[in-house]
Length: 264
Ligand SMILES: [Zn+2]
Image 1 (cartoon, rainbow, N blue to C red):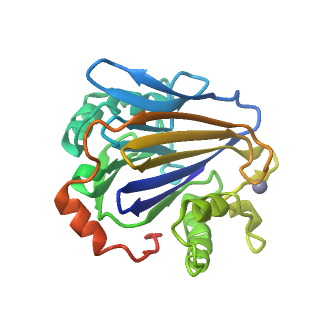
Image 2 (image 1 turned 120 degrees about the vertical axis):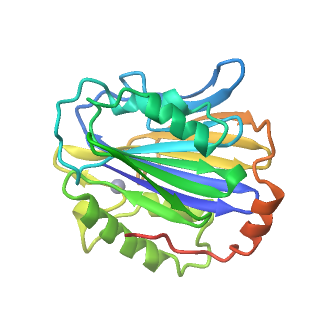
Image 3 (image 1 turned 30 degrees about the horizontal axis):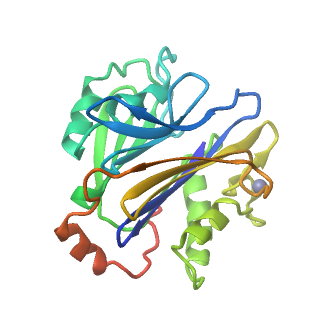
């Protein structure tokens, strides 16, 4: 149960993610930099030692959402949180996909994995339904992915409507705008708000990746993002390679106007 928003910027991107969980679930650990020698990565750790959002030293980023609209065919024996750590050091989309196929996914519950590859100016999504996996390619434009234990497709449509409405704001696409969106409540459709307050289920955290100016910042707030008093945890690292290739920069310049996400 989550919302992921991707916004490309001239020199990088923003990724924001609300994570909605049962309130009883133990909380996560703040983001930290993990150094594997050949690769560095930054991410928060969930209570089972995995993660739902991460980026590496090349600004390649991953987020993972539960796929609730796919039926569960087999009981979980391995947590979805271990998928991202297994491929976070990948240096391109191909190596990320190879690392994903090497994972024993049989008893991992259905998920959607989003990969952001600034050097290739593309975004990819891999879905896993406990039988097979599918890959979708997205261009380097704004996009959003939503899940809800009530219905992923209804959540996608409801949050997509709010996104469209807010896209008319003068500051649309700015970091402040993204944060405001993820802290918003939908008066027309409260259960499908970005910031969730339902019986037993709440938005338990807001996480953010900002890739800009030769560095990546990973921010984490534990609790409902609408609460202004939350303590902010942040870990940062320098980007080793230039985040955008010249081709990607020129492509990006033509996409500078704000583009609404696909909500299909
Ligand atoms: Zn709220």
